[in-house]
Length: 298
Image (cartoon, rainbow, N blue to C red; front, side, top):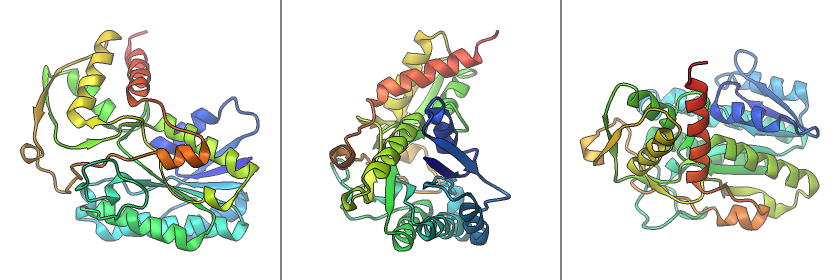
């Protein structure tokens, strides 16, 4: 099975490449700029047509949440126009598209975990452009699997886990927001879930396997709880750690409004595909230990 991933350097793309290694039935190819540029839909279409994959993973996106408030046009061009081009190219080849979306499509006002068919209400430009991407993908290709995920982290790129470990190198106490709740999700787990979905679609692409699904770590916490767990695992592995000072959202103002609650229910994915991500604490421990080992002097 040949899988084409949009983007090369993102957490999802790099995690897919790593998780596909040693799986002889999977050929994973990533393609990014300048050959595939989400700002230029024609380049997206051409790159996908040329490679003729069996499945397209639409992973590349504009993800600078605060910057998007001042750069709405570019965020919309990338997150909606680029996503549409990837889905349309896959449709022309008659193959499915797996598109990555976000918990930020929700308002954050719900008390419990969000279901796939709950009303959306993004509070930020980033969330609105990602929601526009969902609509564009669904419109362009009936064989779509839209995966909303949340709080992604990995050994790659920039993310919350790496930021916390870096700050703990020079600080004994770090203020972290305690009144926003969600599902920390390992990008390596996201990659595993996508590969499971790809195999299921290859075996039996029935209508119930298409649509919107939530793929996120099992269990939830606040950003402060996430940080505390990171430091517990890092300290036990001989890495940097710091005390977490729990602060409110009001004490840490940001340009883009974040949802107070963006917890996602993953029951639909488990029911339809028979797959659920591990407990977020287990995945967090694995990645923190890996990062600590990689940073250790040789």
